[in-house]
Image (cartoon, rainbow, N blue to C red; front, side):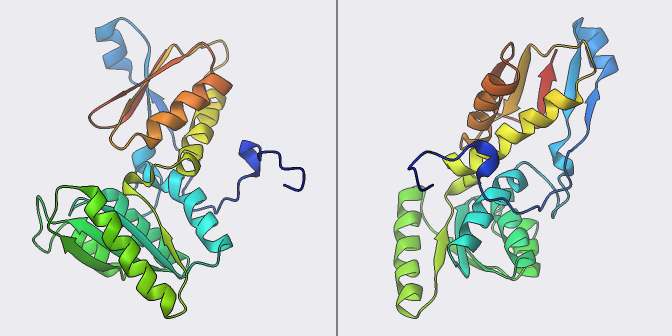
Length: 227
């Protein structure tokens, strides 16, 4: 801003991509077995590609890319990366080209998300490395080549895990707080965690919107709200 103040969370540019808010359901049987109230936030139903948590991050990251005039988006992940696939899907919807530099590890045959990457028009390059720093160096090199040809590029790190990407999950906690029935308080948010961006957003969101709730990141699937 002109005053140099940091923007408020609701002032960050955002492109609407997902079908939000996603549902939040009480898991009655699990709640009965555990003797507590357990809810699940269905972010597998965000509505782009096969859904998933990356769509919330990409609403902010791709808005930033568009505002900076980027035509080409780079990102990375494993060969079957959901983040990479969703980046390709969302970028294609916005008329942007995606270049995916994926680790040549795991399922590298032309199936699963690699087929979807092709459907969304992404350029896919498999890089034989275990170190993402090697991939980021290659990303910088290719970005430089394209920049020399007059193209503006926008790099997104693995998982879309930047401070800007995490804002998507601050807004997710705002959704959760609005969806709780009156009189119900949330005590614990447990999420899957990988590159850490979702967990970071949940931590900040809980501090802002649900100050009585603790947020914890674990390896694994969906994330639950323990009330």
